[in-house]
Image (cartoon, rainbow, N blue to C red):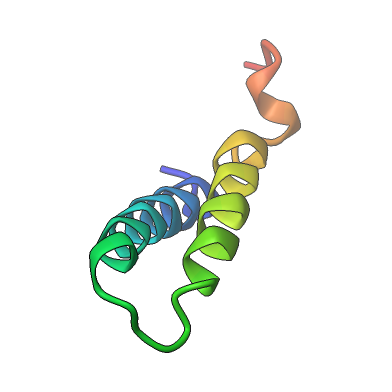
Length: 56
């Protein structure tokens, strides 16, 4: 597996979980969960790179 996709998936899941927790419990730094979600989405979508377009 591509490391960028795995890291993006991990950030995405961690960001979503911390956002859900932040809805109920205010904690310092909870705004960074949105940043983790955004960066995770970008890493997942760009993780395959150019070889995903039908390269052998």
